Amino acid sequence: MTIGASAMHCLVLPGATVPSAATLELGLTSTRATIAGAPATFTITSRDAHGNPRGMGGDAWRVELRRVGVPADIVPARVRDNGDGTYSVVAMPKRKGTYTVVVSGSDGREVRSPAVELKVAAAPVAGSSSRALGNILDGLTDLVAGGGSFFFVGG
Image (cartoon, rainbow, N blue to C red; front, side, top):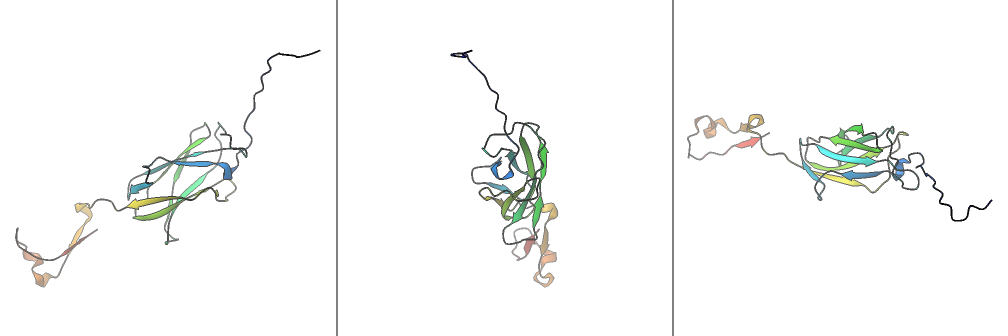
């Protein structure tokens, strides 16, 4: 029997997730920046060994931000399975600095994709959590509007 010009269809499914093939997209500005105390969002897309998107959930990812030069400053992130092979990630760094985004697969090994860095700028000054410091002998207790005195305001 000859099949000839018969149309045959074949469904090709992606293979198992390979953490090193996953992609990480930032939901940030093109400068990869945010401010302290604001959420930084990312999306992980699970892929197989050939780079095909998995299209289904169930993978275990761990994501954290590590501040460059301060190894103990680690910000954990929440990872939500979207059920379609993508995972929404939210982290909220509270200190300014440069952070490296570290993604680990279910085997605990870090994904070795190109390093992604996140720049975190200081948040705007909040008067309710600031304090004024100065020398009481310099008149800090007797300030007059429009008068001059030196003091430091810090958070």
